[in-house]
Image 1 (cartoon, one colour):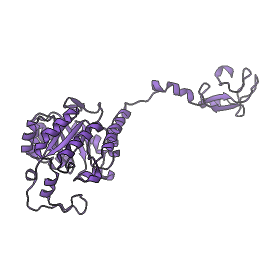
Image 2 (cartoon, one colour; image 1 turned 45 degrees about the vertical axis):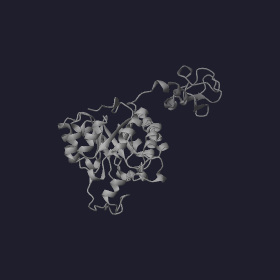
Image 3 (cartoon, rainbow, N blue to C red; image 1 turned 120 degrees about the vertical axis):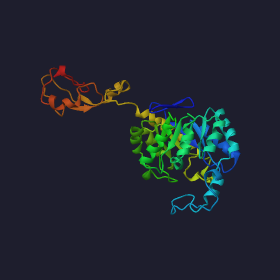
Image 4 (cartoon, helix red, strand yellow; image 1 turned 135 degrees about the vertical axis):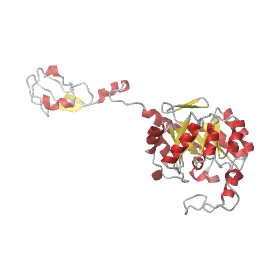
Length: 347
């Protein structure tokens, strides 16, 4: 299935990219800031707002687990429990944030990180579910989400092809009928060099579903390139201001950049068009501005045509340059003035 519907919106190669603005923990535990983020996402023109639904207790235990990634993580050395306390979106905010999104005509859903989060999100009637990369091997969660019958978007970061295949099989066997896979590199931030966008058409061919990109790089270039390779969905973290900090702010877009993402990915999709190997209707007039052979100096009847009295110039009213060698050395049948397009009937 190469086309699905999320909240009444068609998602697939034939439609403009479906843009998801990921709030994550960039609200900095301020509901006022979270609501401002919703407003900013809507103003940028995204299709959907996405939250993350977990608490520190539903995602880990307070036993001192620390992040150790040899200096490669923004959160190096932090206690996992404390990080998730700082980053989680309070569940009591969800209804208000979703309502604010709907007021703007924007879809809103979330990434549940355990089965209790799915139960909670079902009470809010979300239109879809997103499975984060670090949960794509959580089969009980996959089955729980699939059982809702709603579209499921799965990030494929930190997973082998076999593990992605397992996740797809588990979801489909549990009732998932509308599935999107997102190419994802689970480094924060990701670099263009480890983004590997050529994976996108391979995933599309392998799994027969819409493919997108969960983009953790800086800027919008990777997302635009992903659309050119067939991505139908783009997910990007955003914030009101990177300078104000936040757990994901370092690789999040600011509002003007988010707007640019919406505009440029849609342009990229429009530019794909179809296979065009002929002259388009809109190009017909432009053919006039191709070069052709013109008389450059006065030519008497019977005079030989030479490189001295002929010239290849614009516009294109005369014989095309491919005939240059053919006409040289032949003779004019009549007197020709400079500026006359050369045609067969005067040779």
